[in-house]
Structure formats: structure tokens, C-alpha cells
Image 1 (cartoon, rainbow over the protein chains, first blue to last red):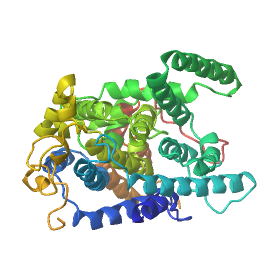
Image 2 (cartoon, one colour; image 1 turned 180 degrees about the horizontal axis):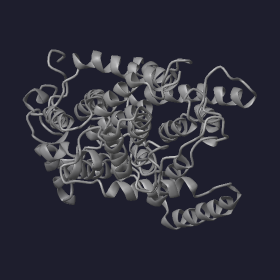
Image 3 (spheres, rainbow over the protein chains, first blue to last red; image 1 turned 30 degrees about the vertical axis):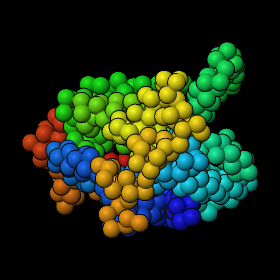
Length: 415
Length: 70
């Protein structure tokens, strides 16, 4: 259960007194973990192509330090993605070879410990928030009641993703631990969780989902006047986004170029006093940095995730996707790492792309569509598949994966 | 530490600007220091860049008499 321990440290590590005392130790934890994984995980060809492209984009960035800073984070997150994809492929293989388990729902044996580790980290953060409410001042804060995060918005964004995972895995005992962090943080995670809950409800009862959406909107409208400045941050964000549109180019301005280049178009706020390190919209910032290829990257990712099966990781990714419209969760270690791990596990388990290349699996599915052959093609009890049959329970033998173009085990670690 | 009028610090700011050329606050400080040290061309260059980065502002030189209230 080392995964849970690492993600617990990732969500709770803080060094009071150090500049960037919440960010630096967490990026250090992820980096050390990724450095270890680099020698034990197979980095796919697609990931290498992606990294080479980013190296080119880093080369054109005017400020080398910014390119190196963002590039390092992307490298670390890419390795984590490959690790999660590889981890998720183990149960996928097992369920395919085990005729008693349903092939469409492999057990997420490594995501549950991660969810529990993150949940414990945010529960610790909630304890710090409550202590700060009663006057505890050991950890510096740039916003009140930030717990171990210096800024309560970042803490609540992570808590939003973890809450989706905990509910999905029915880890109810940890849910109350996240509520104080969510209650004092940004409104965006609440909105994102609401969207996730509505989509989940939509699949079961559309009328109830619409009724809930109406209730959600009415409650929000009722509470809005009670906030001192309900739309101030939104207006500020619109100003930033509007200015950023003037700086977009076809090929982008380079990896990590936002902080250095954006002041050239910053008109809705005063660049003498305000320096935006983030666009407060991850999509826009990716497009600003990477241009049209960045748009294609976002569309491909969203498209692949949309087609993936609706697992707890899928809902965590959805929460992230909504939050990324108003914040910068991709640039935070806890939320960024959670995203790539969830996406990596979905990229296998959701079977969004893999079955396309898995001719036998497609054949079983198509065959099952014909009722009279259903028993023959779908492991029915009437006809038992022979040892050499290319369908039924004898479909995937243990040795099959060695001939497959997709290798579920890293080289040197084959059983 | 009083930075105003210190030519050594002008060098530091110029070095920082070579790595971060769109930092309006650095251009403002540079223009102010160049003005105080009497470098007319350096002042004009810094002010020109500052005006391009912050078109929403107008800048003017204000002479403050010693002992006068700001």
C-alpha cells in the first residue's frame, strides 16, 4: 500500500518557514517518486513523442527558467501517468483471463489506497483548518483558514477530487474529514462536485437530475446576495481571459511562457501591481503556451476520457475538468498528480482505445449482438469453449499477452 | 537599504530585465533610477518601454522640495 502512503505525504507535506513551503515539498515528493518510477516503468512511445514536442516548445520560451520549471512538472506527471496506466493494466489482464470475473469492471486495486491516502491527508488538513479557526498560527497563510496549503482554494480543489473518489469507493468514514476543507475554500469545487453528482444522477433518473439542477441553482441564487462581493473574482478572471485572447498564436508562445509574456496584453488590471502567474483557466493557459497543438491535445484528452467507463476516477477527472475552467489545478502537485493517475488508470480500464486494437475482444462484442450466437460468443453455459477456440472462456490464455502488441508488464518484470 | 541613485543597483535591475523583459515594476524602478542619476537616454528608453506595458497610466516628473510634505 505504498501508493496510499506516497499520496498521503503528497497531500499533507508542508515545511513552515520555507518559501513555497506547501508547494516545494510536494513537488519534491512527486519528483522523487517519479525518479524512482523512471527506471521501473515503461514510458510509452506516445509519451516520448509528447515529451520531445514539449522540449521543442520549451526551447522557444523567452524565459528559460519558466520553461524548465513547467517542463519538469510535465515530465514528472507524464511518468506518473505511465505508471498508473501500467498499474491499471494488471487487473485488466487478470480479469480477461479469469472467466469468473466480469471483464468490463476490473478491480481498481491501486486506486483505492490512493483515495484513502489522499483522504487522510485532507482530513489532517481539515484538523489544521479547525485549529487555525481557534487561533493556531504555526503555519503561515496567504488566505485565512488554509490549513497545510497556505491558500485555501488549492486545498479545497484537491479535496473536491478526493471526495469524488471516496464516494465512488464508498469510503464513507473519511468523507466528514474533508468537509471543513471544502467549506472554507473556493466555490469552484462545490460547483464541480454538483456537476459530477448531476451527471451521475442523469444516468439513473433524468427527471430527478433536472429537478436537482433546478434546486442547486435556486440555492446558489439564494446564497449569492449574502456574499460580500459575489462576482468580483469572476469579473477579474474575465478580464484576464479577455486580455489573454490577444496573445494567442497558432504555434503557441512556448512552454511556461505565460508568466513572462502575459503582461504585454494585460489591460484589464495593472501590471505594475499585479503579476498573474496563472491564467486561472488551465485550458486557456495550455492554448496560450502550446497554440493549436495544445487545443488538439485538450480535445483528444477530453474525448478519450468522455468515452471511458464511468468509474470513480472518471468523476474525479470530471471534477478536475470543471475546476480547470476557473482555477489552475493542473499546476498544483496534489491535484495534478491525482489527475494523471486517474487518467492513466482510465486509459486502460475505460477501454476507450485499447479494444479498438484488440480484434478478439471486438469480435466477442459483435458476436454477442446476435442473440442466437450469444451463448456461443459470450461464455454462455450451453457451449463451453475449447482450449484452442478463439472465443468464449478459452479466449485469453496467460501466454496471449506475449504475442499482443500491448505489453501489460514492464520489460524485465514479466511473470 | 536605499536603492535610489545607486548605479550598482541599476546594473542589477538591467540584468533582471534581460531575463524578464515584461516586468512593468522593474521598468518603473529603472526609469526612476535613471532619472535620478541624470541618464537622459536610459530614462527615455525605460519610460518608453514602461508606457508600452502600462498604457492605462500617464507618467510625469514631479520635483519634490526637500522638507516638503509628500
